[in-house]
Image (tube, rainbow, N blue to C red; front, side, top):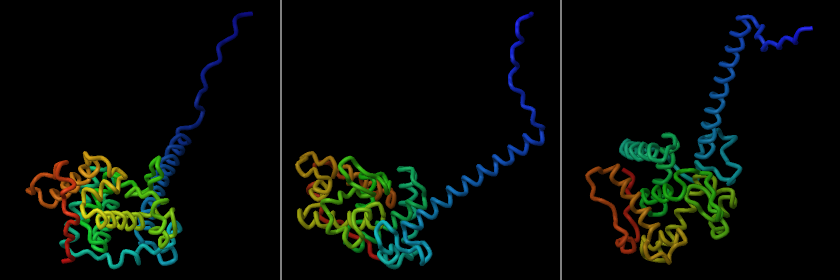
Length: 249
């Protein structure tokens, strides 16, 4: 007997029509997946910023109505132009969607007005703390956009429903801004308040304050490209305790 013949490779015995049909089905499945992902992201953004229908207006994480927390959100043309310029910069620099960046910029302005802090300072803290990731969590337990550690600020979280609220951008920014404002009152100095916020008050180099103030200056230059350069490290603890907040025009 001769040697056994090698088994030939598998042959695709399907017809051309069947192969084309499979390709069409694959394309439809892929398109459906992309559409579903886009819908999920849209609903998540609406969920966070209080733009859901009435039956879903209260996020489970915080038990609060974000639209009610923020108050009226209609921006004037001047405000819209400001928000758009800042959000375009944030979107490019930190690789977040322009829509999400716009919402966070607007939110920082609303909360900044409520607490008497420069909105650009709030945006700068978010940039340094989380790079605009609302679900960021550190090894130390700091959560959300402004990296608040819940065990130290449980009193401020009660009205938002507890620790889980820190993953809600509205609650996180309101709590983080309130903490920073308290530190400004306590120290009477913005640089020291920022160092305290970072838990680095003993760092005489003021590295954290320098990073935040440098980012704040970048944001100012977005709005006024001809403005002078940023603060130096040596100037950090001599910075004014509170920057002026733009009035609604």
